[in-house]
Each structure stands twice: as structure tokens, then as C-alpha cells.
Image (cartoon, helix red, strand yellow):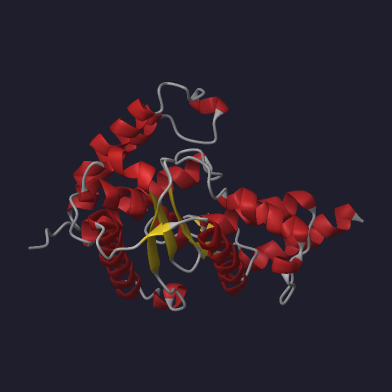
Length: 267
């Protein structure tokens, strides 16, 4: 029975495997309708906010900065998608940007544009441009539909059928896979995305931050600070789902000429 389910899911996946990631052009497996992903994301997002304290931008320079960076990057994303005839991919995005009072060094973006930054991240970012690097990176994960990709892989592995109007958000197994795919609450750099997803989000992220008027060159010292913040506790790259700090920084250096072509400082 499970073998038949796996075959069913694999066959269904062929219908979605032709989707491509913006900018990189990589083809990916997205079994789940984006509307379903956004519905599940909204449910988890609301639950998260009900259990965690958001910092109001009224009277908080940090919270206002998070919202300012979010507005600029989301506008850049919208512009990029329009320029490349991809506006439909983000037409249902309802952007929200929250600063949450938590000491974790973390940030994330859910499908549909729900973004959370933790106060514990700000001592590492140190400035608005570095914050734009992180938010651009996290938003890039959503735009590239990496969560859908990771969840699709999990559904295939567990033989869970995906077809049309199947209510995945009512399926406990699917909900568990969703939470594993996004790993809300985990430390930045230890989320459930793989090495390829992380490097791809770096690529898209520096383009988006550059289009938003933030100098993408700040990404290199920021990720260097993140490496130092890890305290050397990461496993070797081959034993990790994430790129090594050295590989990430080396790729960012190679990406700088491309990213700088998009950079126009705001006055």
C-alpha cells in the first residue's frame, strides 16, 4: 500500500517539477499548491504570535527598522517579479514584519510573506544593512518556495498522497512535516533547509537587498560575524545540511559583481 502511495506521489510530482526558482532557474519539486502552503503558514504564524510577544514599532527604533527594511525588500521583490513576468507568484502575498522579543539569534519568513525577526539577532547584525541581508535571505527562501520543496520531499518519503483539494492542514503527519520543513524557533543557520537551498537563498537575498538600496557587500562581514557567533560548534560541511562558513562566504564573494549591478543607494 505504501509503495502505491509513493508511486502516486511521485507521479503527481511530475506535474509540479517544472517549476523554476527565480534568478537561479533551478527546477524543483513542488507538490503542494501555494494556496495550501500559505493557508498552513498563516495558521502557524497566528499561533506563534499568540504565544510570543511582538515589539510595537511605536516607540521602538528597532521594530520600526524591521518594518522599514521589510517594506523596502518586499517592494524590491515585487519589482523583480514584475520585471520577469512572475507577478502571479507573489500576487497573494500579504506582507507583515514583526520584531519578537526573544534572545534567539533567529529570523524567518513564511509562505505568503509573514516575516519575524528575533531581538537576539540584532546584536549580531549591528546595523540596518546587515539586517537587510538576513531579511533578504529569509524572504528569498519563501520566494524560492524552499519550504514547499522540503515539505514535498518529506511527503514523498512518508508516502503521503497529495492531490488537488486534499486538506493537508488537517493531516497530522503533514502538519508535522510542515513544522520540520520550517523549524520555527530553531536558531538561524540550523533551519531545515539543505545546503543547496541555503546557498540559493544567499544568491537571491543579495539581489533583493541590492535592489532595495542596501549595499550587498555587507553580507560578507555579516556572515563572518555569524560564523564567529557560532563558537566553532558546527559539524563539518559533509556532516551538515548547511554550507560551511567558508563556502558560504566564498560564494558571496563570487556573487558580488552580479549583486552590485542591482545596487542603487537610496538617498
